[in-house]
Length: 154
Image 1 (cartoon, one colour):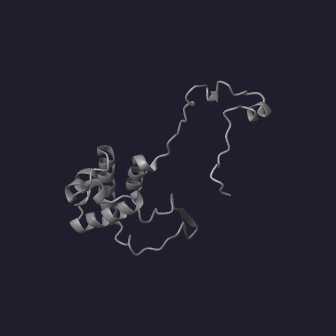
Image 2 (cartoon, one colour):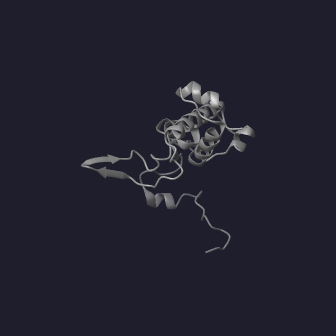
Image 3 (spheres, one colour):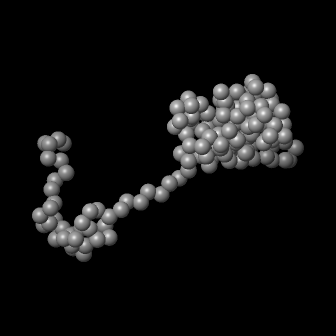
């Protein structure tokens, strides 16, 4: 069962979509979101992410109703005709609905994360207590220093 239904499409977009169009939208969203319906059925996706996926499928289904050539158009980044130039906002602008893209970009596994590495146990501010922070030569004489490879490898 897709993340969205035909009634979700109508509720969120005001457009009507068929069940087949919702299934097509589901397939496209799965490609760009890098997850599947099976992962959500197994309980591996949070409720916030499921809501974003539902919205993405609804927006994509509405997009498909207005762009029936979504599966047959060609990839391009710019169109120029009669002195008018149109540039696509992103590589998949002819396939992925703008609002669906925004939902997919907000999925927790698609966002950037900062990673903080805390201080080592028994240290002050990341520098071990007995380590000389101002003299690298003295650090080589620290009795706690050990070679990384003791197994005789390369």
